[in-house]
Image 1 (cartoon, rainbow, N blue to C red):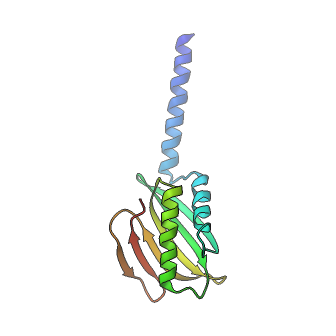
Image 2 (image 1 turned 90 degrees about the vertical axis):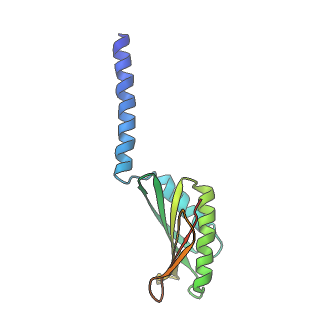
Image 3 (image 1 turned 135 degrees about the vertical axis):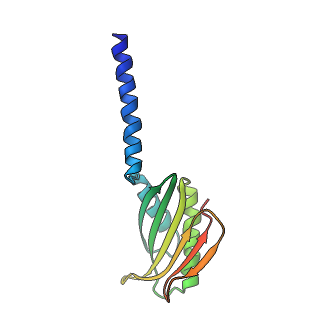
Length: 139
């Protein structure tokens, strides 16, 4: 009887571990990560609305946030908002290793600026007239 109980415990633990690994391999993310990211971005003054997506890449949780901002906001101010969102996200979601911030202007949702925050030093590159990527530390 004790052997059956031990076998049941081993099978249960094996199932739990395997389910977690398969979920991770399939880029599964806990829904609370999305909720937390959207809440963090939405709490920043100047962000009118936010949508978030996330996925695991190896051991790195990558979060992408589209934030709607005032259409008259200059690109440098949208970039500053992205940096504030990165700081708030790093505090509320410490497991996030990378953040991509995409500013969208007003109801039309035209891209204004895309800023990527992740481990490493700051790097800036221009991807066209209305897109800019900025690499800043997330942790």
